[in-house]
Image (cartoon, rainbow, N blue to C red; front, side, top):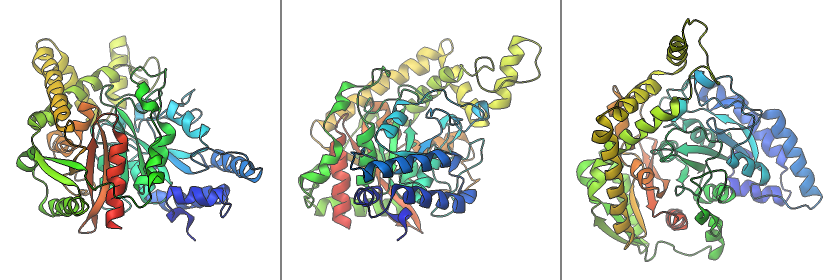
Length: 484
């Protein structure tokens, strides 16, 4: 039996039943990483010794009949912008390449408390600024399905680690699609929960009003398992919501194992995606087939209008760049992070440190955000974008008043080749057209595999209203049941 090929929930069951030991699970995944990651480059740093020690402790608890947590000794990868005590937290940047956090993020504490085992920190676009995991200071990550193409970004390392069976589960962050797009590109499930559902305390920010912690698994049940362990109100995070203390998501799998969750579900498909953002023809064909699965299962499909969706990409990049500019200001070469060796004045220290340590994409977004916040541009760009953001949220409110979920593609195109990243930032930004609206409105959204084109995976996005995360989980498991 190849332990690493098991789904996370299958591993958990076998560990609890003592069919395999937790130590065997961790050893198998470490071996997998040692054999394959030199080529894929999914990890920035590993936690082998501590992971093995933790596995022995969990095996001892099981042997004594003591209760164990939701994650039951499962190997987990953590995106490297999530603080982890005594491990590097680099954000994929030269700016923080030697930074070791003195504390754990809340999500890391929850994983530890639920007996999950952190096996390492995963590669990412620098400070999460990218769509392909090619802007990392530590080199690009390759897609395990086809090593000539990207795994998506910015959480590409986390997605690739799950797709390559190097870990059972992983964490990413999603600001405009950075969990759902790599999940789609790597043929796995990625969930971005509602804004405020998972604490962001200890997550190094990119854009505070857009950032979410998200999860990766090989199927919906996997992703739901780790989502259950992370959700909940956190007084350390001012954006955390007490509504996140709702009933466990995994109860969906216990209610009725044979239930058709799609029967009677009201599904909306935005007309704006059809008219304004046409997908690759073969990719669109896979989406059309998925819609037919919903229809045959009893779902009611309706084409709807979300009028301000056509402005979503522009609104997203204005707001995101402005918040990036603000957040990146802390990296000045003084308090922490990279410091230039050659300078004569304070200004030169700032300039030289930031010039040496930030990559091209980081500099581009910092400059764009600074411009949009400066003088009359603040009202012309940033304030206007915030107004349109509110109108977009109201559009979604109207749709969800009479529909359960919104369906779209996770990405309008297939994974693209390494080193072919779009010739301009504007071209690469278009990759977020399907995914960014959910972040702007704080909605929950999931990417689920629906097929392949030329051997490359295609993902479908299922979006739900804020704190209706169980609804998208039902839609996802309903689809999986219908196609298996």
